[in-house]
Length: 121
Length: 217
Image 1 (cartoon, each protein chain N blue to C red):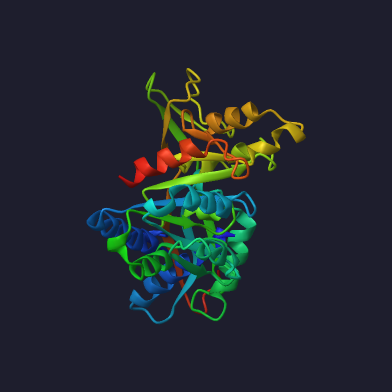
Image 2 (tube, rainbow over the protein chains, first blue to last red):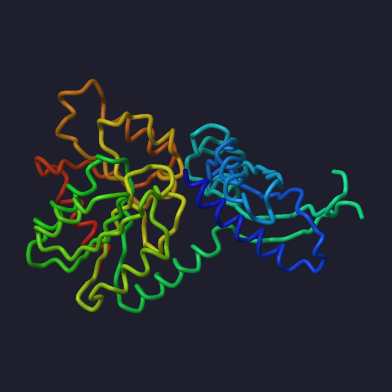
């Protein structure tokens, strides 16, 4: 359940950003995070942790949206970039195992959707 | 007013990364290497450290940061061998984070050490996710766990600087081929060194000791 620890960091970041908003009526509708495939996050665990950790805070009731990014490797032999869809970390072109992970380790809060108190969603 | 989107960029591992960087700087200044042992509960991490202490004898200059959810049992096992050990209890968390490791590290007599082992909480998923400032992660996989584990938990094996394949003395009693473990490890992380060891019979421990002595230099 590394999702809980990651969500705790997320909620801290979100509440910090909400503090900076000048408009006191602003309410948080949703937050979007970018998550690379290497993190093996389980969506249900993320949503449950987010809902639990936002309870009683200004972020309560907001929705967590996850922008999943695939794991990409670059081959050190042929130079091709390919997507890792199986557990095998091999080049999609020449099947060499001599590859480096170039994308898939991303994990950040990317945007927040803000509305006004009382407005219909 | 209608809903609006605010763009932000906040690394969700940022605070952990800062503590890990602080630890790395301290280790460099003191000339100490730190290895982070990660594997399932019961994979043989503590047994490997016990044997390491026995084999290095009086020459050893290492300490252990022992991560567990509960109990000080593993720390007691190492304390019996006069290894400096700090018990880190996570109280439920399934992995160690960099801040906790940093605070435990600064409590050690660092001038007397050249190597620190972090024995992470028994778990193949979460500890792999958290950089604690180590020089290398070492995956410990026992041959009783199934040869498909590297494929099921790729992050750990991808991140590992070396893999210890433990309990190899049990191979004759089990329906398996150790080469299948190596094949799967290398499918996830081509070329990563795999060390076959048995803490019980001593098989492969010479190579393990040679590797960690090299790591400590």
